[in-house]
Amino acid sequence: MSLKGAILSRMYAPKVRHRLPGRLRLSVPLLKRVPEGREFLANKLEELFLLPVGVETVKVSFVSGSILVAYDVSVMGEESVLQWVGSLWRLIGEHYDRLEQLTPDRVDLVLSRITPLLQAALNENHSFDKRIDVPDDVWS
Image 1 (tube, rainbow, N blue to C red):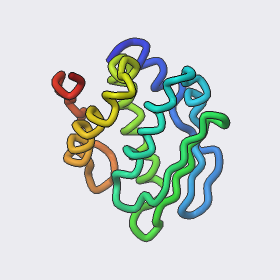
Image 2 (spheres, rainbow, N blue to C red; image 1 turned 90 degrees about the vertical axis):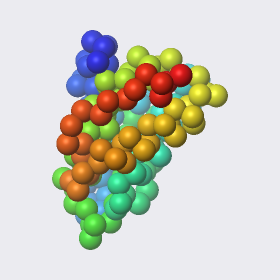
Image 3 (cartoon, rainbow, N blue to C red; image 1 turned 90 degrees about the horizontal axis):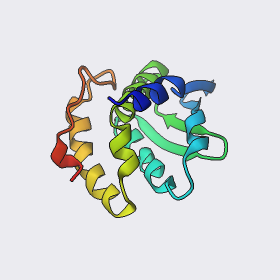
Image 4 (spheres, rainbow, N blue to C red; image 1 turned 180 degrees about the horizontal axis):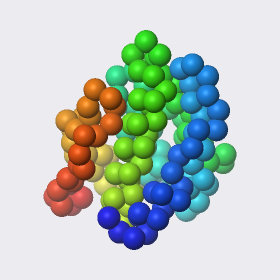
């Protein structure tokens, strides 16, 4: 993990702003700092947040710097949602430099390569049991 990625993932880690059963609004100040023209990358986050069974919808807002997650309380609880978001956020921090270099024409390809790695590593608690090793060829 780069120093910049580590700092950003800790400093700007998602925090619960509001909660209702089946719904969490997370404050993610870093979203307000996404450079103009790079929104395409952050929009793909919504797809990754939807991976666990039980997450129903995800809305990312650059204006408010928030993520709204709706989930099925009969499938997963708030703690599971927070574990998943935290795990995904750490992964983003670990690969921040490479994500920052992605161009719009490469995002879908890279996402299609990362998604199976995430699905394979996802445990019953909706988090990762171990660090996910993303091979170099995923980025090329």
